[in-house]
Image (cartoon, rainbow, N blue to C red; front, side, top):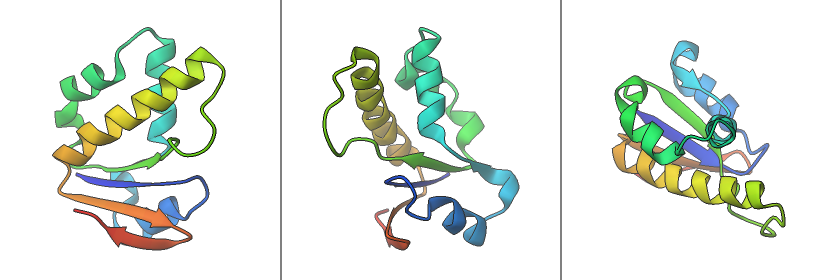
Length: 108
């Protein structure tokens, strides 16, 4: 598994397409986490329970932890959940790449 994360519009998808098969890419993973919350599921538990499905994937996720903390309780919960999920995914990934201004940094 490869995890690619960074802020919005930093070149994550382009990097993933350039460095892997398109069929392996799971983009906008942060939105999947929001969907899980809206469905009343625990995103961290869900990801841990479905880790086998992600092992051969390239996961692209926006890092939404920067900036002003949202006033809306759902958005705050989402922000926290994305952070926790990124921790789990990074721990299980073979590679972790951060993209900033189109420049990649291999973290793991």
